[in-house]
Length: 391
Length: 221
Image 1: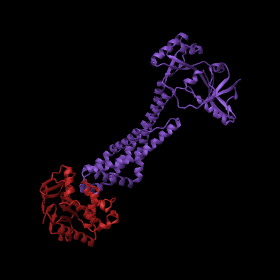
Image 2: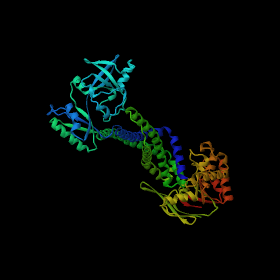
Image 3: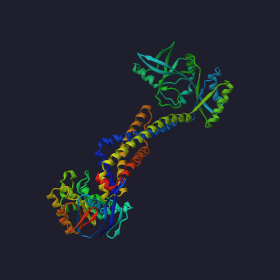
Image 4: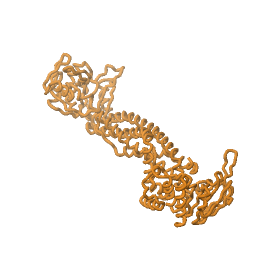
């Protein structure tokens, strides 16, 4: 069988020029690895977006105050926000919050934390769970009870507090009592505000007083109405309550779209690296093939004398080029899987690998082999048998 | 069986025309053992390339087994080279990476035959030229005489109408050369294989049944 003979011959030839072969492969390996990485990271992101949808639901949105030079005086009032769910049947629940970064030191170690002020509804809206104790209740108004995130609890445990519950700590002029510890929530963005695992959470009235800040955002659970309808409803409400207040709404869908957009940049970058290295790698392969053809002019002459058609010679060298690219392709697929695994490890998203990415990798490698092997193999096929034999 | 009629070959090198073959007409019958002899520059290598269909004549016709050759079809020419002609070269021209057996099998690979069948036939032909014990050796592990025997096996495996040998003993010492000539004679006599030997050596030519002498691109005797 001529194809089998050609594959055998290709492997034999590539093994003969090992060093050259390896050098030519580098470009292909990087190119294919980028393509595989690009596609599987895309898959991971998509999967993560879906997971966040499932985790938080699509009925949650956040409303932020947009900073506006002209209307500095227009502010959210806590009572207005809480009143919103009574005003509109579309708004099922609201959870205003305030957050500011600070440092937290204990036993010579420092960590960056968020001080958050929330209301009772924050717990349900964010689908939080407790390790122990209780969450902030609406009866905690102006009181210095706090709930801590899982990482702060861990920090305290390391510092020697077996059970942080009930412990007190000072911050500024105030002494806080820890009344609850939250379970860890998955990281990686989403619609949840800030980083809850690293937050000290008090009632919003306490936080507003301590931070001397203003409420800039709230979360809301909404009905199945269209986003534009919901937006109009909220805007309509606040135009009455606080004239000139500029609102910005973020729905779960928008957030996921934004996340995907960010990933697009990354994907584009990998795609660009991939295409460039595939072209460079392809030229490397072409070079190796041209050398291979030049070195084997005599062989080509002999084969032609023994009855090989031009087509046979051409397919022999194309096969060699394809085998070369496929070897690079398989290494590249391996490397691409490693790249996307490392990526998913660092962003703490679930690792996924799509079969279609691997198939595409094999396909692209083959295509590069055929494309860049075409010219050398054609020049081999067009050699004059006599001239080739004499060389 | 082989008919070439009024073959001319002219090379154009810059402004000068070199007439290498000037009207060669030759008929070779089945079972002949023919020597084409001539000094270097007489055009005998070019004639061999013509007979071997490796080169196209400037003018003239070529018939093999009554069939006229048209030179513009690569497929057809390759097929005829593959099926009707077996080449034996002065410097053997074996492929260095392949074993003796795989070298012998090459012509059959281009007939798209199954590997197993090719191996069996290759073994059979290596036996015919008495180097079957060297089947798994690479060419550089073989002596000159053994390499030429492998090359002859390769020429014969496709059961060609004629074997075309270009100075087949040229690279061998006289004793080994004689062994190769004996092998050719045996193949010609016992198996009725048509053999054309191109040589400049009159001693080789004397061992052939018929002799054609070439000088300055024409047959002189």
